[in-house]
Length: 387
Image (spheres, rainbow, N blue to C red):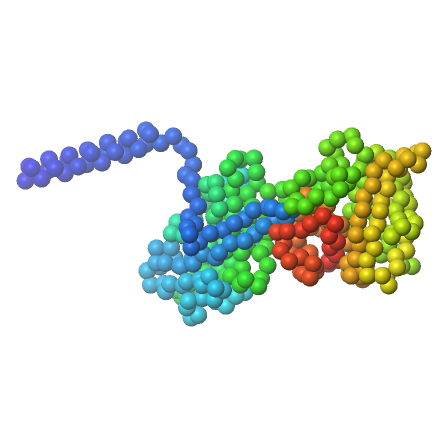
């Protein structure tokens, strides 16, 4: 008997020593969750080629007993092909049983997720087999989860599942693709990836979701193609430059062209060698001119020239313009001219105050945008009118 007592005392002392050691060695640093993706679950979320790239293979997300918190809850598996493994458990796409309304991630990886579920349902945010957080929806079905651990650098695929009071399990029909940078200087990219390949990903947060001026857009150097040296790097050097930024129709059938410039006092334009219009530059380098366009021609080349007070040409920009593109704006919608370094989410933010509305631009210009990742200088996109 004494031997057993000594053993128990010894084991207890050992546990106490281990606990004390853990306490003393804890440096207080926040826990980090490394990306859980593997060969069958990958995500690539990169701003590239002048646009926000949101691609990836959907993960298979299963609401397990240990995730849902209910031993009797049936498992629900999201199918990468866009369906579900158990139609009796997981709702159809668009079912409000579980939805993600908000996902924000700070540069240090700390995040907050929020959405809707059935009232009083137990909601779990998880990545692979790692539970990021769990909570219970309120009487209105609203829920908010702030994970205690931060997301580590890399690409994460995060899912949201719920178990209602009657034991029904469900998984959100979208997956959160999150890319956290190696440093704390870049804002993570967050996007909703639909299960269906036909649906367009929705950008919730981007590394540069901030207002950009026309000069900022023109000076960037990240797009896959280049325009002439005269129209690039407007703010990188004192070299004079000129670039068109938008087109619009006004009463009487005149086409209005607006743009930015550096140096010079006046901008004039010709279309296929014929005078089109002229305008003076503002203090900020902005300019605007208008003229008539022969819509019976399939295309034309417009040449914009920046001139000094002595009428000396100091910079030029050549823009091919298709009648097909111009006709898209005849309903009064504004059209934008893509410059080197432009991104769809930047254009959306500048136009609507919301980068997420780049999705509307893609839909409106579906015939001209084969891949939202790739937009090229001198493309002309029509902007949907504000609601």
